[in-house]
Length: 297
Figure (cartoon, rainbow, N blue to C red):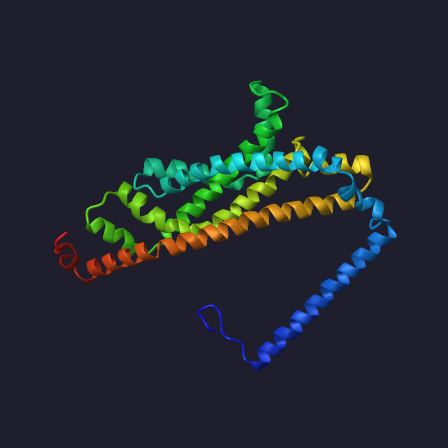
């Protein structure tokens, strides 16, 4: 099937694609074979390195599950705060008033330009100076603060781009029936833009969840990633531990993206009727204001 960005390959192109695929798979297989051989030589594939994850339940109850709980807690808190804050900032960047649009744009661009790790370290140092947060909670607060500041700025740009991606006719039709700017944004633009923004938002939520590992690596946050040090110290199986932790991250992020894909599908299905009505209104207004406005309510 052809589209603007994709042309159906011909017979020769299909043969080339199959050849490229086979070469790539063989190359990946050779790399994996080499890596596994190297690990075997170093004794990293020995049963005693991997068996604790099956035979010793304490490795899960003491290290992995509590670490996963801290990761999910920090990620969910950051998501709950960053999503509405980012949405408000994104909408504010579209304000008609320069005194709102310019300062908000400056804040968004400022925090987008700073690496999230620097924001976490700065937040931790700030909490130390303020002395209002206990040392036990300081890593969690610093991680959440850094994630919120950075990701709210990124989400603001996602929201702004999602709203600007809508056809101009949506706004024109809403203005033609007398809706104010706030009503247009609340009832017309934002609900339609949510579906378009959802894939990018989900990707950013996955980034939030993964970036909690920075707190475990540099701030002493007891997240899933930081458990690698404790498990390795007790079981001497660094490679095996890292593989298991990576698989847990993959499972959690895959669950998140699957849930978001299901939600996106439901949103698109539920808005089919609404979208048709809006398009009809736009067509009437574009065909001539009197044709759309002169009808009896």
